[in-house]
Image 1 (cartoon, rainbow, N blue to C red):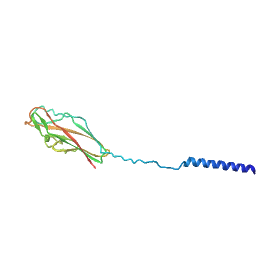
Image 2: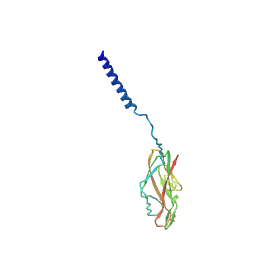
Image 3: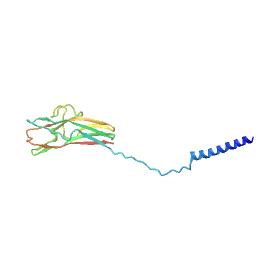
Image 4: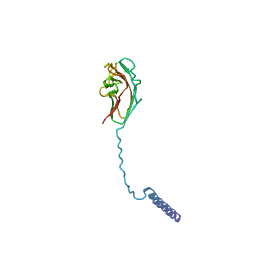
Length: 172
């Protein structure tokens, strides 16, 4: 019987130590929350427009007429905006011999109707802005545009320069 009391006492002692240690290990000290930090991410609209070249040349060697640019232009667009449109427009070509108006520069891309408006079937005069590509967020699109120039007898010999400008429009 004395042996049972010793075992029972030993058992209770081990049990109380185990409970005491377990409470310390599991619960620890009272939980005190520390300071918190509010996190805000502001993601601005982003557009990436890449052109396959930074210049095109019209080599007009001969009588007035329609001349193709030396190369097509591949336009690649990526954006994180919900909906977007990329347009392009041309400035007049200026030179020592005068000015060639932008409506005699023609562009052909998949959005151009396949009718002849003076620059050949599918080529549209660059008077005003022309849609090049449209898309939405996560779209990565590419298109190829071809350009032509129509010369007349009034265009004096010489070098003329201008620009084709690409504009991005994000729709919220």
